[in-house]
Structure formats: C-alpha cells, structure tokens
Image (cartoon, rainbow over all chains, first blue to last red; front, side, top):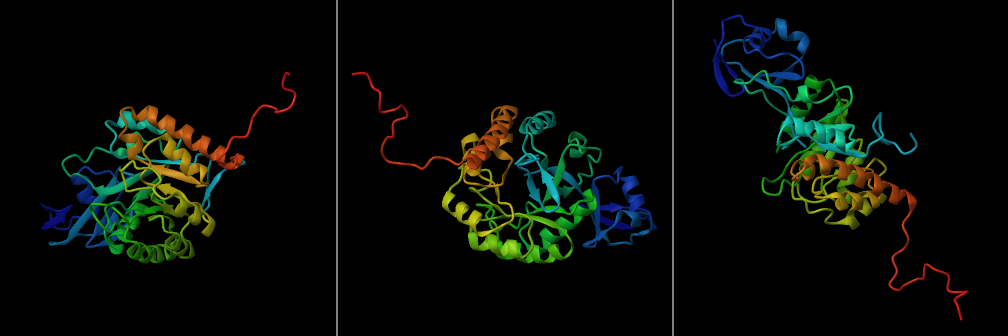
Length: 66
Length: 256
C-alpha cells in the first residue's frame, strides 16, 4: 500500500500499523506525535491503528524555534 | 521565592524565556540557555526529516532543568495553530503553548482575529496559553478574558531587534490586564530588555537577540543580567524625570 508520510509517498506492507511504520522509519516514540488524515493518534493506539492505502500521515517532533 | 513569575499553575524564578532556534550549533545553544538563566525554553513543531530520523533537538536540552514551551510558529490559520498545539501536547505531554497565528509573511505580525478563535477552542481543551499578539491593549484584554494565562505583546517585529517601539502601549496593557505581560519579539540588546522590565513587564521571551549575536553565550548572560536589573529597578521605583538639576550634595555648610 502507498502511504503519504510527511509529504512523501512511501510503500509499506498491507496491514502495517503506525507502530510498524515508526519502526521501519527508525523513529522513536519519545517527543514526537502522529497525525493520521488530520486527526491526532494517541501513542497508546500506535500498535493497533492499522493504515490503509492512500492514508496521509504526519510525523512531527520538536525543532529549534522561538 | 518572593518575586516569582506565576503563569497558570507554574511558578518561575527567572523572568527570561528563550528560544532554541537559529543557534550556530547545538553546543552553543546549550551554553547560551545555561548563561541566560532561563527556566522556560521554546521549541517549534515540525515534520520529522525522514532521511535523518535519529536527530533530536531534545537530546541537547536538559528536560529536568527546563520547561518546554512549544510554539505554533509558522501557522497562518486558527485551524493550523490548533492542530499544531494538539500535536505538541501529544508529543511533549504538556498543556503549555505559545500560540501564534501569523497574518503576513513580511512582517510576521499576528492575525489577532484568528488568534482569538484558536484561543477559544484551546482554552476549552485545557491548554495553558501564552499568545503572541500586538502591543494592543484592547486585544490583550480580549485574550485575558478568553482565558489566556499570560499575554505576549511584541516589542517590535520578530527578529527585527528594534526594541520596544511603543512603550506607552505596553504601559497601558500593564494597567489593563491582570495576567502576566511577557514581551515577545523584537528585543535586540540588553538595554531593550531592561527597558521592558523597567516598564513593569513580567518577563521577556527572546530568541534572535541571543542566537543571532556574534557571541550568543555572552549575549545570553547580558540578557539575564538586564532582565534582573530591569526588574529590580522597576520594583525599586525610579526617580521622576525633571528638566532641571537638583544638587546631590548639601547646599548648606559651604566654606566661606
């Protein structure tokens, strides 16, 4: 399936959860947040939120700013 | 803690808040944060770079020492600012937010109408909101009435270093509202910070003034001292300004 992650189209195996995607991208869950199709997904739901073809995911973290 | 800064349920000794953007290196940022004496540091919410997922700003900030204040910088609509604030809360487990809704790319002045809309939504969700706004007393009152924990009028455009452009408006804001007034943006050097604090502002938030200085660590120390000096001078109560001289030495007992 194709998922749009942070503006880039990425291929993942069908049935992947948010947790699987984070693992594959080597992103640790500390200090970050995930938005799926413009809705925030709480961390406790990462392992049972399955993605589907065409989903849009935003993965954010903190960067320097004022 | 006799002269503490209270924002919502939090209490701080330092009245200087600093940003984490634009430092030449993370090491310089770390030293500058330390020299500033700040307890509150701002951070921005951005997409993870998928090619460099291992990098983390938070590895360079001592989270036991500093309270993180995530911002909604770069948001031009209430909707984007609300979404960014919620993402920050999820990422950092904090209800604090420096709420910015920008109205124009050239000036980075706030869109106060959209800001107020965002405040009304986020207050209901339990956020402790520090809104970036103009030096407009009417807007400051509206933000206070809507439930903001502080109001952060700009001194001058973000990153301009122009200092306090309208000290009279800042004074009126201080007379108008009860929540802390934190000057945010436009402070260029130590005297600007001291002037803001001498007016009676409760604190200052700055980033470029420190990060963009030739020596950010020394400037951070200068700002630390200026904020403290300005606060003390405000509490001490300055003498009135007069046109003519008043002798400091006795005018009696002069030799004949």
